[in-house]
Length: 192
Image: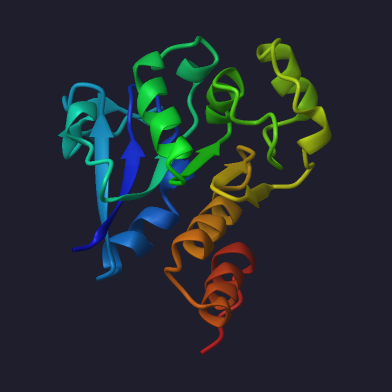
């Protein structure tokens, strides 16, 4: 049975932040890419894409999940989407990787998942200003994307680095192929 890569979609999600990893997962015969929303009903991205998710949050199979991906979007700054908190904490506590980019790192900060693992966000001061209870300063890394155990975080300018960390974590590509993929999409360098 294929492991599932779950991607949470909501009104106003940042569509470009998941645009690099999703096609590669779709091409894989090792994983199923499953988009879900709270209700399973269609959502509209920040870029105006109307998307019908595959399932609702209630249909997420925690036993088949290998990663939960949280794209950014303004709703995180407004403390919306709190219905996903229990699922996120449960998967994380069971060793399933949680990957968050841009403002989704705020959600992880509020959830207390950034306190003891290396992580990044859009900026340390940004994170501290919108998550007053955040105390993970000493684990903050000023880098486009950071992985530590079962946590992947990235700033909003790093969807390619974010994808690379996801691929590395789930073992989609070996390191050689991963580096070639990264060089192609980041720097336009094609190598056979």
